[in-house]
Image 1 (cartoon, rainbow, N blue to C red):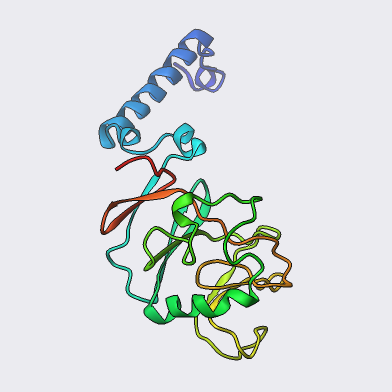
Image 2 (image 1 turned 135 degrees about the horizontal axis):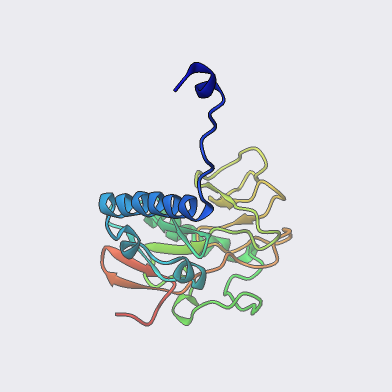
Length: 206
């Protein structure tokens, strides 16, 4: 082929059906390689539908030391598990006169029957709460050290504080009087699978 002929040579356009076949084959090969590298990973994870439906979650509590708070997540909500000390439990008896709903009698946020007690839990030692303020949905922070502190009263007994609007809650998640939050923090349904494991979101399984 002469130089002139070569310079004027234009490759024939690829037939559209061939182009489609090549692209399909390439994509199929890439996908196949992906499956070979990570076989059936999705089968080991909860489906998005199950997550949206609020599938129950297991939480190991064996590593929580007295006075510590562990966080988990259920239905996209923060879950708190607090292992209360004897001092924290004792403070609950002193808070009653200062609380808006000390015996969880309000019905706007129902509480499971097994948590309708002064410590609002199945076992006094472990408190399980949804960590969302009942005012406007902010997330309170732990203020476990008693005594005077910025934004808290001088006789602060310890508990939780919502920095957004100033609501305060005791070590059972009960809201103090004259605060923006209208109700106590919510207790989710839960059960003990063992002494060291909780199931959050389902209280019917043994």
